[in-house]
Length: 176
View 1: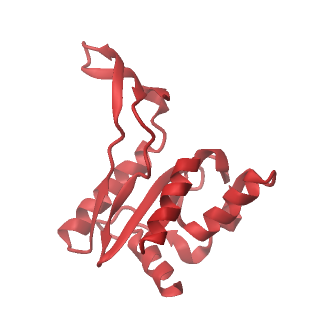
View 2 (view 1 turned 30 degrees about the vertical axis):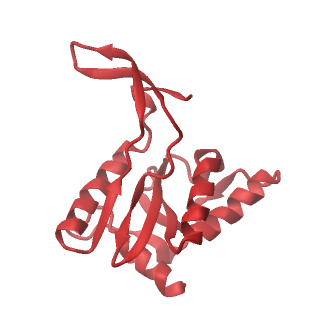
């Protein structure tokens, strides 16, 4: 079982932006997306602040988000990196397996990546992710460079949509 301390919650800034965007999508009738909780067991508590300071994960999570966009089942994971590449080590085997099976059932799967150093956001389609993943598993490159993220999948803020990823999803659907 994996352990985490409070500073180990990487990606929480991106997830907060996605959560707020998903609320707007829901209110506007564009999508119903939910953040999937990760089951944990607390080990240490700071009762004075009312927070968990050390816990372990009960089970491996699948992806961060799942829901429906205009009748299409969608799942995705959110990743952040302060480098100009996304380490393949940030993507876990069980996540790849889940997304592949999700697609085999007619769903759409991808990851959203925030490059914090340049404040850029991108959607990376599963097929492209799988290509890099497979290459890394075979001894090849262990990261996905920023240059590999396609401009048509860059995500921008639009009004109340802080991370308006549905535009990139629409581009992805048009491609398929």
